Amino acid sequence: MPISDSTVSRFDAEVSSRVVEVRERIAAATARGGHGQAVTLVAVTKTHGPEAVLAAWRAGVHDVGENRVQEAEDKMARVDVPVRWHLIGHLQRNKARAATRFALVHGVDSERLADALDQAARAAARTLDVLMQVNISGEDTKSGVEPGAVSALAERWHALRNLRVMGAMVMAPLDAPEAVLRAVFAGARHARTVLQHAGHPAPWLSMGMSGDYEIAIEEGATHVRLGTVLFGSRVSPT
Ligand SMILES: *Cc1c(COP(=O)(O)O)cnc(C)c1O
Image 1 (cartoon, rainbow, N blue to C red):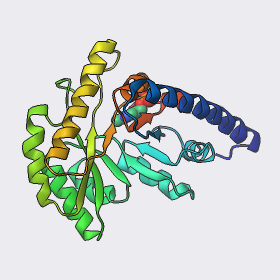
Image 2 (cartoon, rainbow, N blue to C red; image 1 turned 120 degrees about the vertical axis):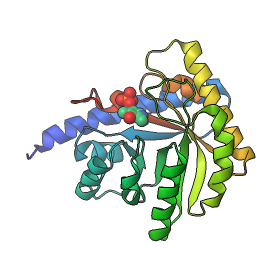
Image 3 (tube, rainbow, N blue to C red; image 1 turned 45 degrees about the vertical axis):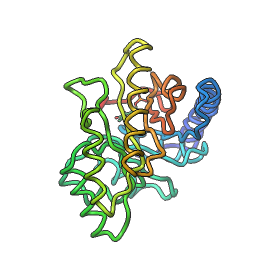
């Protein structure tokens, strides 16, 4: 459906002003936290159309996150701006080949998936940057490697020559008290240290969504994944 120019520019202006405000909050949280990290704002465009990707780009956001491969590929085909695509959701092994189109795969949570991604990356003649998803809160509904298993898995991932393990990713429980959020984020920070001790570069920590990104940054997040706070509520939440 064609959308009029004025609709486009109103949406763009809205996203732009939200980006400005979020960037201010990111800067303030970084200063409060004292970790001194650079923070990448990943605009989560899932359930929104390609115009959300364009609005993010025009607002100076060059990293875009999607949680489904198919939806991401549809948008990749429909925008011509060179954003970096992040795959942030749970990934099935049979989608590993498509995952090599992304700049960073956030949710790698098993040896089998890591193997499949490594093979796919080799076939594509590239090195794929990945994050190990850890399940700090221990919720059954969350994917992720158990904290106690991070070290052993990190050792085994050395064999995967076409993957570069860039850090840890975590999803905090929704609406948890601040103390719980901080404990989860600190746990993810510790998991990253374990990855580093195992010899992976692991400079990054992907944590923080619309409801908790300032706390995540105070706890050291280098990548925040923000949807609602930039684009409004999703039509069909996923
Ligand atoms: C949807 C989603 C987000 C963004 O959530 P908001 O609360 O809308 O900011 C972040 N991370 C993951 C993995 C998601 O699926």
